[in-house]
Length: 379
Image 1 (tube, one colour):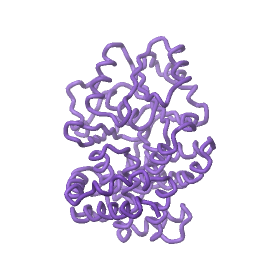
Image 2: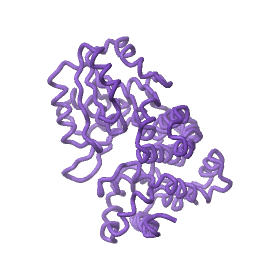
Image 3: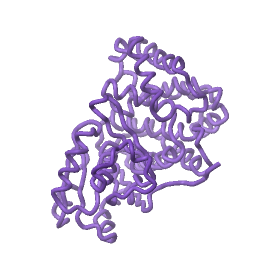
């Protein structure tokens, strides 16, 4: 078992810790940042940064997940200045774009698909400030960029894509819309669970995965107490730990199928993964039963066979089924065959404890369709 672990070098955590960002950057002699942000993430903070930083460039990411064309726009904007680092302030889409920009700005002829093949990857320094407790991108060696021409998501991985500095400040998450809190939180929980049951799991990734699950089960409490910033900080740390876990151990079938679903129907990643996870757990139960026992013990469920029911109930409480009722008539047998083929070409297949066939993946999508047909996903 390989117990090597990749993670960010410098992590600052705590409510209000964002105020340390400029000091940290200047300590490292990064004085001309290229700042990528989402409009929903910044208001007063953005105004303060523009006042305090003498040299900076700002790039506001479009709504939705980053694309090849947006990556090119960001690089063109960066090249107009003399930026010496990239700062990402936003959700997973912002951080993913920042990683790709940091690499491609230095390596203009490098294709995203060639990134994993490089022994060494030169790039600009990266500071990540996540504003959602979900994707874990601030801790991972993966960037996800959609190729809009091919209608597929590219997710190259390389240890050099892990940000240099991470700031975990839940102040940014308090005013998130409920559906974003839910989708991202369920994505993080899936990261942790899948990392723990992955065939690439090791002793160190297990520590982060299980601790992430312990913190992320608070998603139910945040749904009931959305202004509870202390619980939100727990979720943010849990998401970070889950990111470390799956970046080192990989996700598996819920993410493989979820990515295919999201690319086809242009749906948020966390929503898609949450939709698929209960059915993947059912499929994987026999092969991963001992690992699922550890997970349900932390969550507080008496029987590992009830894990998929717990995830189903979470989806009900967090209104995930309801949000996807429109999918049922669109999931024709022809579309399901396409989705299965797409899922089988991506990451997360061989790391599933039971490697699925095409027929297995089609059955999982058909189970989703049946669930959504049940009163629009409500029971």
